[in-house]
Length: 116
Image 1 (cartoon, rainbow, N blue to C red):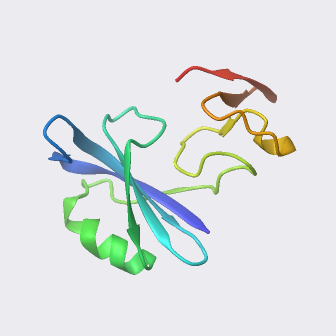
Image 2 (image 1 turned 30 degrees about the vertical axis):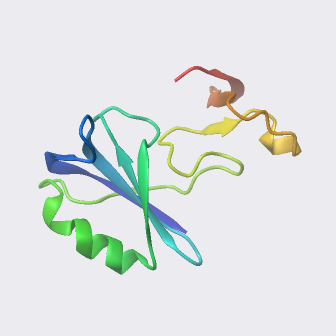
């Protein structure tokens, strides 16, 4: 697995109200996802697209990213959200009792409630 992100040169409209400011490409064993973020500071994505492979995703987005280019990211920690820039997970996911809609974040080695 591999993750990398980049900021766009110009915000890109994704619908009538929202613009994408950065993207993350997440290459997995059988597919690649492009996560789309509607602010420069967003921690989790608001939209995503499926691609069959990383090369297709990079080809679609390469001309739209800014001069900083692609920035590599570590893979997410076990049970954490793939699209999150910080270690965030669904509460209880690590013990196979997910509490959907409730998130927690790893801060200073301790899992605490995340209110995003």
